Image 1 (cartoon, rainbow, N blue to C red):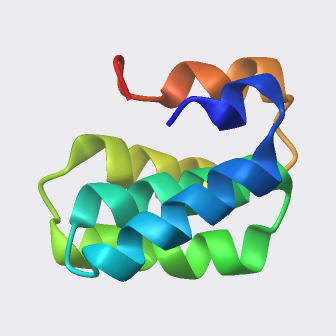
Image 2: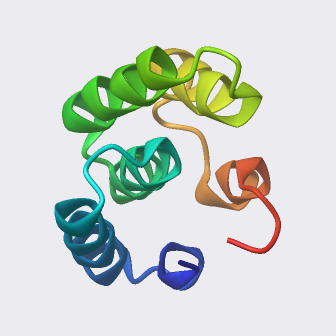
Length: 89
């Protein structure tokens, strides 16, 4: 889901929500939704979703990093935030 990279936050969020409706226990999809929300500036919901992603898999370094960014740098410029994604997602 690269829609968020081109500023299509609403589409990325909608796609993540649709995917989660099919696979609600998929931790990577939870993380993707949290990151899309973060990119869209929906910080409170992003934080809650990313906390869920970390709780689902505490060993997922990307989810932990995304949560750290959400908690500490919610206003980080988008150009810098984009670098914190998994390649190929």
